[in-house]
Length: 349
Image 1: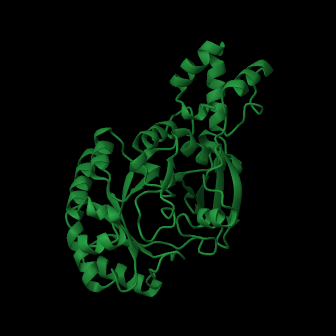
Image 2: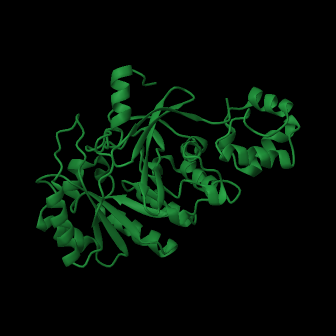
């Protein structure tokens, strides 16, 4: 059954007109859906509620489980309408609440430090399923729309490669920034990619101004190929050229994620190479000690070594920070909670 949250207000008008639902009722439905309401919860006539329920789904996801960290981070396990499972993370900061959302069920990129990719790509999420994560958690926190919204920032860094689901992800960006909906500014949205060069350029050409975040994790193509199969298709130079292009179009600095793996990419020489690569690009580097994944044999660098790595980068003139560690006690690695649920329940479609 189609989910109405997949549609813009204009598309909703077209969808509902043949059912006799027009005018301000459509706007009521659009706003209600973005508030996380089901048809039953909306302040509309009973006959319209029934008509909607007979033809459409309202909310595309439900919270299956959640785990709360000692630091307040909450990891959510969501069930989709077809019983597939995805996850997300709510991180609480002084400036507001950041929600990490998934864009695919599983992932086909094969990065060796990520649990999301262990079963490959199951399917893409629709725009409404991505939006549904934000809508559901905003409601969970007691948020509404406008000034009463509880989600302030979004990171597309959950399971999946966002640019491998380009059409649905960019439609999600249009939906979540809609002034009649959640109205979250693109400047408060980060999109993380392993580096699909053509799609980075398309994102720029299509006029988006989200914070582009590149999962780099190595300073040479040879080292990157050991961690990320996508490096066999795109060189670091090609990715950096695409980043320069994105900056020229959006005027937004690019963020580079650099996961530190013990004795593989955490030396002073690695820092020196990385600083050289990013020279001349308006950028920032997030240094992250690897979250170990049980099914992988990689070991993360210590936080002490990570701090030294950041100091090296700073001395070399790069803007760099050591990412604050949140949710270590609740399966913090991407895809880890979903993977454990699948292993114990056999619930993979």
